[in-house]
Amino acid sequence: MKRFAFAIICCTLATSALAAPKSCEELKAEIEAKIQANNVSSYTLEIVTNDEVHDQNMVVGSCEYGTKKIIYQKNDR
Image (cartoon, rainbow, N blue to C red; front, side, top):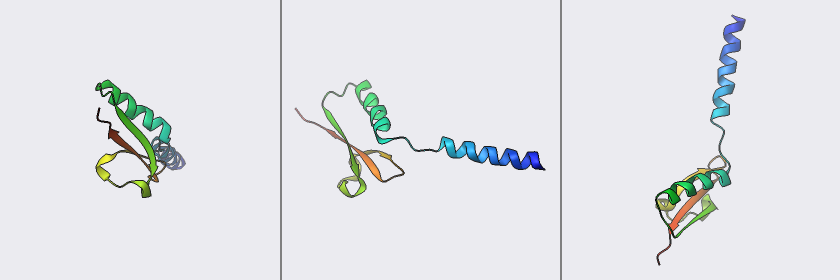
């Protein structure tokens, strides 16, 4: 029974470690790499607080436990 309880505790800890949020800078870098892979040349990615988001369609990521968002804006030439 102790082994079973130990296994359950280990699985719970492993799951919470996998669900740990990424830092905003790390997530922004991953999103930026995907955008550049699609040959988008002129754009802006910005990390903002939830209160600063005016258009939900611009949100491409969420970080720091959902307290901040990463917004994308394509710059027209």
